[in-house]
Length: 84
Image (cartoon, rainbow, N blue to C red; front, side):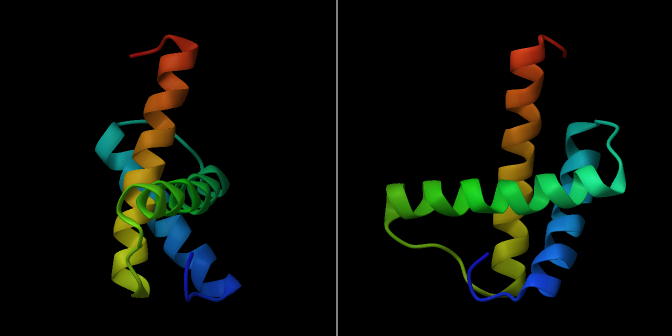
């Protein structure tokens, strides 16, 4: 998460994971929300840099990127597991 410290990354990641959980209607715990939000933000940031050459900065930008990335990870998990 570009420009955020560890503590802020955990907070933003947890919030992003929780929002993604609500959007995707999945049932995850607090720890999984934090993990999905942080890993989702890392994946989405990587994809943004690869596609458009930059990423979004600040808390709000990283929150949006984390939500998109966490939703993508939930979708991929469902795809692999075969759940709808």
